[in-house]
Image (cartoon, rainbow, N blue to C red; front, side):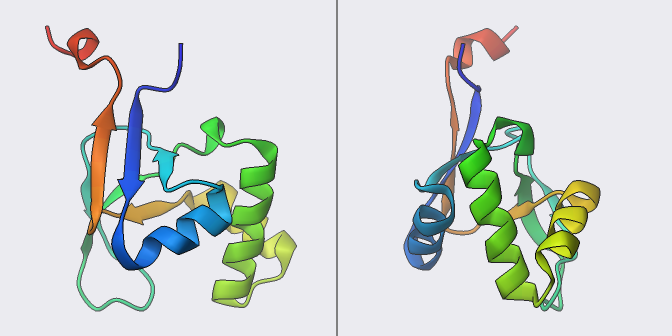
Length: 106
């Protein structure tokens, strides 16, 4: 069975997602988002949490390199930050997809 919850990113961020993950469709932990304070943004943003355990080794490696470049971390620091904090994904310009939604309706 495949992972049930996905975020499909459109618009300005789509090219970055394709470069980092190889696709604009990434696994998320839950289909219900939440607000989070993010670096560089003054107001809390509505986000979904990336399901890191569903990434391939190559996707995770590219993500760590992307975080290191974006936030001026060493690769080791980016890996530690990723493990400690996870990755909140902005909900704007994105669509949540639920595979087999009938499974989740009771």
